[in-house]
Image 1 (tube, rainbow over the protein chains, first blue to last red):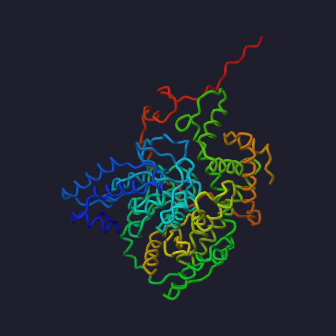
Image 2 (image 1 turned 90 degrees about the vertical axis):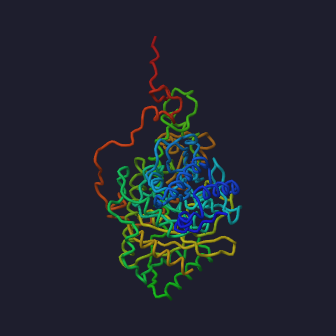
Image 3 (image 1 turned 120 degrees about the horizontal axis):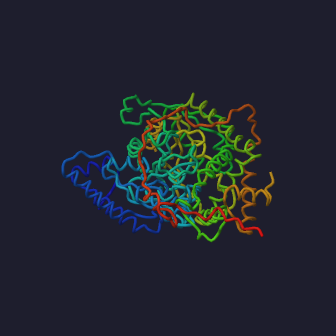
Amino acid sequence: MFTFVSIQDYHLQLVHGRQTCVQAVTHYIREIQLQNHLNAFIETFKDEALARASELDAEIKEGKPLRKLHGVVIGIKDNICYKDHFISAGSNILRHFKSLYSATVIERILAEGAIIIGRQNCDEFAMGNRNENPVYGPVKNQLDNTRISGGSSGGSAVAVQASLCMASLGSDTGGSVRQPADHCGVIGFKPSYGMISRHGLIAYASSFDQIGIIANNIDDIEKIFHILSGEDGFDSTVLPNVRTDSAIETKPVKSTSKIAWLPETLHHTSLDPEIKTGLKNTLESLQKEGHLVEAVPFPLIDFIVPAYYILTTAEASSNLSRYDGVRYGYRKAMQTSDLFDFYAKNRSEGFGWEVKKRIMLGTFVLSAGYFDQYFKKAQQVRKLIIQLSEKIFQQYDFILLPTVPQVPDRIGTSGESSTSGYLSDIYTVFANLAGIPAISLPIYKHTSGMVFGIQAMSSQKNDIPLLRFSETLLKKH
Amino acid sequence: MEVNEALVEKLSRLSALSFTKEEKMHIQDDLQKMILFVEKLNELNTDGVEPQLHITDAENVFRDDIAGKMISNEAALENAPNPMPPYFTATKAIQKPVPEN
């Protein structure tokens, strides 16, 4: 029987010959099949994963040193390109698309010996927080199959929750890694903007998108993060010269931290009382342990989600203009002799409703006559949010807040046309607007039988201190 | 801001999207709700605030101008619907003028 605790433990098993990479892959393939009803994976790469596993086992037998992610079985969200593999961003418009190249993150994990087991279900173009994908069907929460996984990296979170792989790579534009991780009781980490190359990540909103990691423990997240991060000639937004290596450990870890909490987040009407109590308990226990825990006003709370939707839809309307049915993607039979009609038919039949809605809103906020009133206004609000964030981090090391306002909904209960679902992003979008790192840590059980956690954030580029702090938080609870 | 049929029509054109009559009513309603939702920002005074254009302080992150990761013509056509190698195809955009009598 194969069991996985952590990469470090797995590597010990490998070098002592107690486990093999082939055993690991065989185990996960069987689990994915057994738990097929969860709908976490769109496709598994069974044969090649097994072939790669046996090559990696052979390396060990030959006495070669283990690579950093040797034999680590990773699932990838269906919006991260893997050469010669299908990728659809959960959309019909890319249903039969095969990637011609690999994302930088894929090249990096493969170079360190990782095994990619398959691609995972998500919301279409990562737009959504329910993962009720109209093309592939909903992803089910393993704790309660009638409930949603959250999204948009829902398949990636459930895959870790149900032990269908050791870790997942997702993407987080407004909470898409942290929110499903919270709903599934696993750890979800969104690094600072610019820590990880977005080359090969299908773009939704380029100034918000960041590849994130979902796993069971902080040590694994840190190991994978270190491999993924760093400069890339294919993405000029990656921050140069930021270290994420383990040598940072030499810096003394502060025994006490300065922690801010934001009263407005706890007084918000949408917040479940148990989630509120959970965060309060954490804050109290941190205070008892000697940390400085203080309330800091956050008057912008009601503006963050509207600003997020203006800016991300604007960027999406531009990013998604490339899907025209000419070079790739869905094409309706060419019965029209009008070029606009041709594009519009391809796009209208290829995209789902949520995507079209967001393209229309994004087009509106960028259009002549409305640009200043909506788009520029939202950019100004983003500036205020960043200034507030910087001000808080001048005085405090971390901010603690809930990840989600509610435990996961039942599948099929959303009114698809309403904006009410947008408010469930209220605690997560702040980090994407400000470009700061944020992590969701599973800590509490809810009386509904579900789980929830808390969210920690630090200032930009302080990803490693955030991970270290997260580790101590998890150990104490 | 009131969303009317003319605005939906204009935005569909700009977005290269087409909607059926029924969908048009639906999208008009959705857009109206979304715009109302984001108009919350009007309550905030942003006079004199510079718009945020970039999210990090990194500037001019350049690399040497050396081509890499080239894709062959053949590969580029692999995902193309109805290609005519070495070309992509699209619907005929230029029509022969109808001769005037």
